[in-house]
Length: 95
Image (cartoon, rainbow, N blue to C red; front, side, top):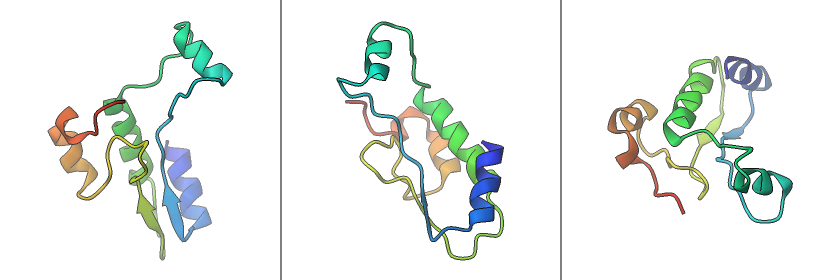
């Protein structure tokens, strides 16, 4: 996650977004998940990874950052620290 934050900083993009993996029927990864061979990380762990990426962003001059896609557990409208403090109640329910 640290390397991701540093790489984004070097690119200094206009827009940066992080999305949540959505497992849909059909692809091989979905079959691995159904068979128990793949387990996605838990929402709290994902938020912690998001924090680590954000902590390693540096000197972005004009970047807009969002996690507001329907796949995301947390549409950022506050701060990540507030969401982590609230825990699961801050997250969108899983489908």
